[in-house]
Image (cartoon, rainbow, N blue to C red):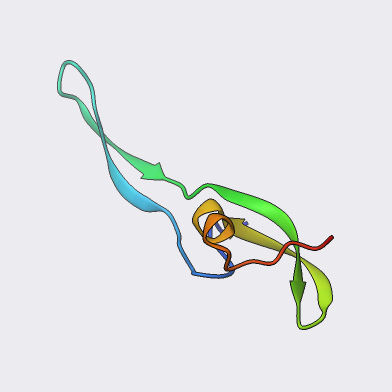
Length: 63
């Protein structure tokens, strides 16, 4: 399953692990996605949403 927020489209960013011996390997920084029941067009739907969208109020959680 893709690591994408269904509201803002935020996905993984990429960087590198650097060890003490300066061995460099690629790594991923995944967004903090939560599965939430949200109100969409008057009905409830399950969405995978990043915590930034939840905190800013872009998503209305279902009661």
